[in-house]
Length: 127
Image 1 (tube, rainbow, N blue to C red):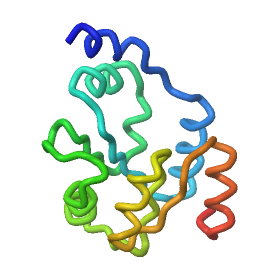
Image 2 (image 1 turned 120 degrees about the horizontal axis):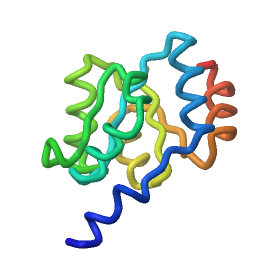
Image 3 (image 1 turned 45 degrees about the horizontal axis):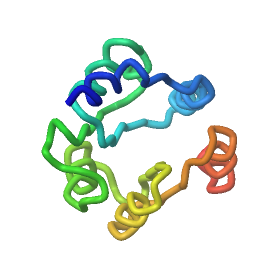
Image 4 (image 1 turned 60 degrees about the vertical axis):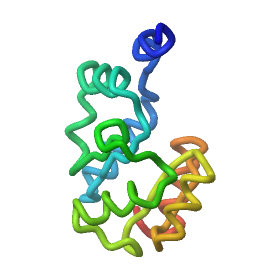
């Protein structure tokens, strides 16, 4: 339990990723957050950072009792925000999460860096 209390203070944003999110948002792309996060961590991030305003919606696992890569969490995202799987791009750094999303027809990009992610979005014609 002590470990979970210490984690939030260690969570910091990657500036380049937030800048990419701003560029995507400014270009008219709707962004959504789908995250596996504990209560203490998400509460810390929501209080400490203002990038949350960039998201049109968010799905946080601890608040739903669902978790990536369970299909139900992706289905919840799609249904709640009226998204079409084939027109949605899911970006994540965990292969099993990407595989689960792809099985529902969602396009995927494996995140390695902000630069690589932006390059992939351009290649797919989304920037």
